[in-house]
Image 1: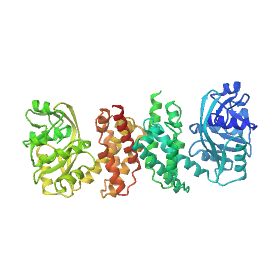
Image 2: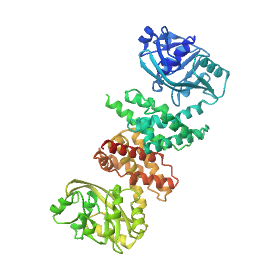
Image 3: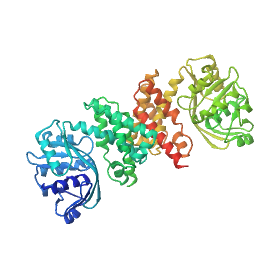
Image 4: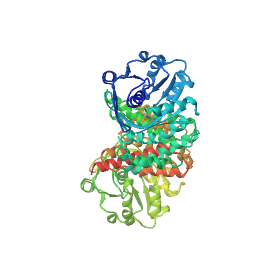
Length: 303
Length: 303
């Protein structure tokens, strides 16, 4: 459900390896129906000329596993999209960004169905039915309720067998917060600091101090929520970011292209969870407010 | 010392009422030497055709009282400007913005000389030798060392006798923090939120939340530093701001005109003092970083 870059790439990998995959498409429906998927990937290019491309989940019907890779701003659409796909034991796996997505699925379709995956990858849609998988690709899977279960291990094995690096985490929340330690500062400053690249952030003493401050707040919030992240995480993430060059975050690309920005899942929900746990996250809240304002202002200007 | 809008207006009022005032000028030197001051004021227009206009403090020589109204970013120039004005009992009164100015004067010329004044006013320079005093005008004076002293009362009386609303505060620091409760959010967001007016801030739910958060951090920092501000201050300041219309803060005017922005006295020093007192001021630090970056970026772009 949601066959953009992430859903398209991972779905195509599963289909390539013989899984019965059905893609829910909107923008690329016609192109994929006619030509299938064309995938450029550092793990090997491939094409899938014939794929199951659907315009509605009613066309697809009940399935074993729903992979949800809609942009989180489109989550309200799931109210209509999910029900036709469900049978008693259908699993729901969200590969979406940030916080709040598992909770949303659990609230509406039962906590026992819900798994999440955190994608550490760089994948772009380059044209209709065309995807470029540029680097990395690890998915860390976890049960929304936590713990390592047989079905979780099974799912990780299934992904691995389809050429997708994959592991299972006892704590999905730990993994999500760990990823946020990068996304909150770098996606955040990329919009709040006048459309800055990662290089702009690292190259400015003020923005670097800001990035470190945001990382520390995120780590402290995670800790109060029970997730003690590695002591070297700030340095590790800065070192990794230094290798990226003048990288424009996905949020900045969305912002500049006039697309929805995942404000609530990347900043809003983390702020709310941190606050509720008694964490002091003033930098994070300030960034959240400035991004909400920038997005609202851009939307108003484009009307 | 520093005869811009503030120094020019208050100096001209003192001169109008018979005080022996010497103005140190740079930009307006020629105009004031030729035509004196032309003041439009809601408290009554007036002109001073003949004034003592100096290009250096050596021309002026030792005085009883030095009124310092340079922009705080020019404070290093005081190293050269102050000494020619000093005799044993010369008082130094800074009417500058934010924090750190009294400390600077005390460090170099002795704590016993230093007084400060917080100006609640709206005054613009409108042309060479021309000043427009638009509204308000109260100066709250205080001893840097605190307390009400005879010389402080005497100075307040002198200002009052020259048509300047003036009172004396037992705690200058209290008064400075109280003013920062407005300046930190509104001057801050005016630059950090893409050149926003006060009306833009009040009209955006995100920026209003941000302004309130910044005010609360400032009040909490002041409290930890021993200054308990009025319980209704946030509401009072918001109500007052609502009457301003689409007001552009002085920091925004400076920023847009390519002039120096008083980053350290309005945000940097308050952040440092708050931190040292154990206050949690993440929003304030985030705003400080974004403004430093915006100013550095503008400066780099204009080269």
